Amino acid sequence: MENMKTVDQENLKDSSLAWKLTAASCSSIFIFGIVMAILGAILPQLVEKLDLQRAQAGNLFFFMNLGMLVATMFFGPVVDRFGFKLLLAPASLLVGLAFAGLAFSGTYRMVMLSVVFLGMAGGVLNGGSNALVNDLHPERRAAALNFLGVFFGFGAMLVPLIIGTFLRQLGLRPVILIPAGLSLVPFILFMIFSYPRPKQAQGFEWKQLKKLVSSRLLWLAAFVLFFQSGNEFSVGGWLSSYFQERFNFSLSSSALILSSYWFFLIVGRFLYPAVNRAWKRENVVLASVLLALISVVGLMLSPSGLLAAVFALLIGLGFAAIYPTTLSVIGERFAQFSGTAFSLAITTGLAGGMLSPWLIGQVSQNSSLRRALLVPVFSLIMILALQLAIRKKVSSNALKSNAVSDEGED
Image 1 (cartoon, rainbow, N blue to C red):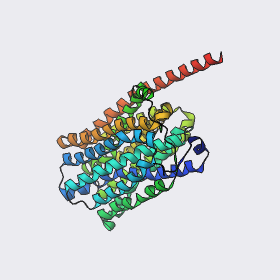
Image 2: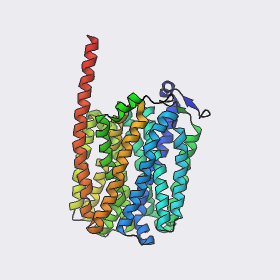
Image 3: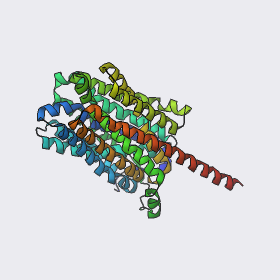
Image 4: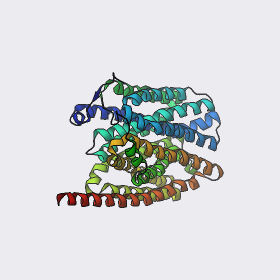
């Protein structure tokens, strides 16, 4: 640890190093976007190649997300105590090796092993990159985290776009090996840059940590991530299969719809700063949830593939602001333990990401993917209720802070 280059947080704010680390984090979250999208994008090929049942396919999502959950549980306390470099650089290398393993897997067991390691490494990249950017930009957390999320969307969009356009020319293995090579970019960047000093290098203040864990606001936000992670994993994982099953779309056409879904998610995150100037972030999330809810119901009820495709794109637009904006609330409220707070919240989110696609696989095995879309409908209703509670809690905290400030002035 002594040979790791670190800088003071105060000096980091005005340093170009903050933007270098932001660039490294953007490349990292880009790779995580590929991790999130690749299984759903290649699922039809895996089902055909390995003769998988629908429930077995759902198990792949379950265990990949289980790997993410396990890794995410410990990344936060580690980075708060020892700094970011210890985990981010090795995780970037491991995710590349896991991609390579997936490319050369010839059995269901090997595919399962590869996706578990892919999930573990991806979980560290996701949580670590978000926590690092949160610390680098304390005065504009929501905008910075939404900007980071843009690169997640680019990564998630890349694989289905390549599959839809070049699968026949390249074959499946080269498509998977492309992100394996790209994973070297964040690995190199995370290795060469300096980092802010750990916030809890002297050890944890257990009284403050206990207060963090017992915070009602933290758990309200964490369960927003629980349901929203489930939504993003489910739609990203099953959308291609839905269009093939319901409307008999070709593999290429359904992959392009999935890519367009991610593109609209990117557009939504680009638009966030402008929208946030007109609306408070809590209201932006509420509007996003309502748009997503209407769009999922529209996708279920659409009589034609064209109309369903329009609703699929609007789902991406509706999902855009929910996850990163909720993270910004956590990062602002728990700045001194941001890694640990993010670890708890994202772990809770990943539990939803693990459960929801698996549940859709089980429901669709016995019924249809159309009926299984009731899972994200229920999740969005829950997010709406939780977000209303968060808005009330944030407003209450603001009133208390103003009252304390007024008393101090008196």
